[in-house]
Amino acid sequence: MNSSGIPGGRAPGLIIVAAILALIIIVAIAFSVGRYPIAVGDLLRVIWAWLGGAAHGLDPTIETVVLQIRGPRVIAALLVGASLAAAGAAYQNLFRNPLVSPDILGVSAGAAVGAVLGIFLSLGIVAIQSMALAGGLAAVALVYVVARAVRGHDPLLVLVLAGVVLGSLLGAFVALMKYLADPYNQLPAITFWLLGSLASVDPRDLWIAGPLMLAGLLPLWLLRWRINVLSLDDEEARALGVATVRIRVAVIVGATLMTSAAVAISGVIGWIGLVIPHFARLLTGPDFSRLLPVSVLLGAGFLVAVDTLARSIANIEVPLGVLTAFIGTPLFLWQLATARRSWQ
Image 1: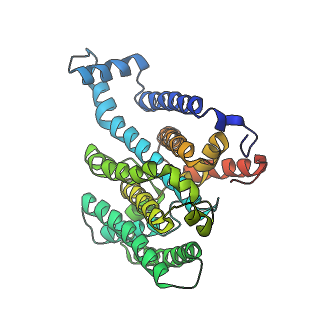
Image 2: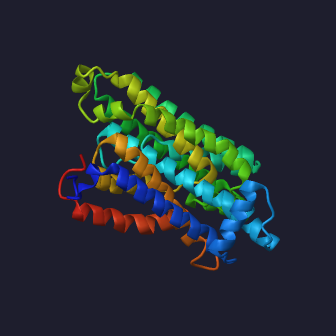
Image 3: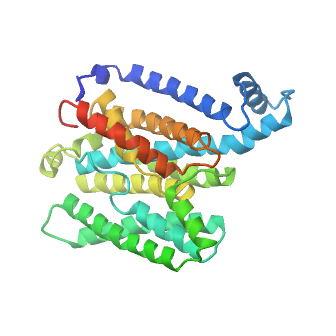
């Protein structure tokens, strides 16, 4: 029985199968819904023809919408949602804190500085995304160096405090850039990026960011059994033969790489890395070997659903960061109200 009284942790295979089926349904809806509706049968014919290299006999517009417009966007939503949820689950386990999210060490703030600076300098989209990725990685590296330099305190506490302080400083830099930016061209672009969107994603972005996200997920998956031990005190973990420092560094590097790559192509999208791991934990319990795959599936499905809603509910696209806040807040409060025991 897990923290919510749901015996989901006893049947992880069934939960994963159900999550995969739900994800397939959400993806099918995402491809079908929009200003140019596409029937499920036509969708399947286009995909089958694309896989087999045969003709589908449909209007070429349908193929264009499926493969060139919605396809990259849906795949990006899958990757970004899965990465943020996996990073959030890893960080919550690492810091033994249910309020931790992927940007706890300043990765989102660092990526924001890189992207905003690129927009301020009127650089191209590739340069902006590269600067966002580099900014996120550099911010976490600086936080880790500062934490290592501080002795005599709890290393996890120092990491969190350094991340909060550096994140505040980087946030001030972003605010300064917004104040100095051209209000007619640069400022709208900065604001749009900071609110999060997948509207401008193209296949080139996926070929760059996708491998980075998978590379960040790999160490979390390979170390999934040992990451469980990090929820214990360092002394207990070392007594069990776990090299806590090395495992902690591997988790931070993997989670940071995933988050930086996600933020680079989507902008800042909050709440996924905080809320989704909680719901996954309700279903699977705290075992990270079960929590990680379920978090990945739920995070991917959640962002695909939110992105579909963002481009469908109004004449103009609603920023993803706004929708995830509106949806994530009540979900998180509901989870707090219904949980019967500690998140651990």
